Image (cartoon, rainbow, N blue to C red; front, side, top):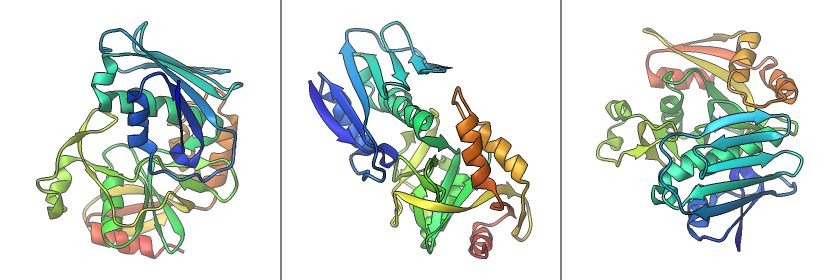
Length: 291
């Protein structure tokens, strides 16, 4: 049995497997992530056995004691909240498509487990300037990643393309990757993206993965900014805290949501804004005006 300790979201996760390939893939995901929180390690055992390639994405089912993921009778996983441990059974054929295994099984299992016991998933990008973290929020296609990349090009620090809120105070936000994933139309806005390789995002959509110059593993979230594209000059105005709360709760997969509700109420308290804009430069100037 081989073992390796990683720190996705800055939290310790000890992975064990008889095979080297799952550990290699885990190192691609989290080998560069540094420890941010002192806590007992979550344990994950990965067992590889003969079997065919799973035909679809895993089915997620939550319960009071944890959750399960299942593609088929061979490729499946369970996570136990009381034991702080998970077990992933995967077919040998599933490992032949490393990126699919990484996104749909390994990262899905570990990040969902961490969100269940310690973090709250936010469905928001995060950038920081002068120690001030700003969450860029909105449904898919609203331009969160595009604006995050524009901010990074303008000298801001990139924190996460898909943020998670830690449980301790100060609203610390962290992420699981140093990369920004942009859809192909972003090439029309950023000429340096032309000719870059196309990857497959966790959602299954085609994207361009970009490494920003300034990156941080975490930042305190000072503002939640909801994005709205429309013609004309950029305009930043207060946004409904209740609407912001409902937005974040809509992406919460916990069986018991009471802890997440409390944390999210704290997060949105007097911190929510609506940013209406057409041009990215105007949007960045508006963000710079936040108190």
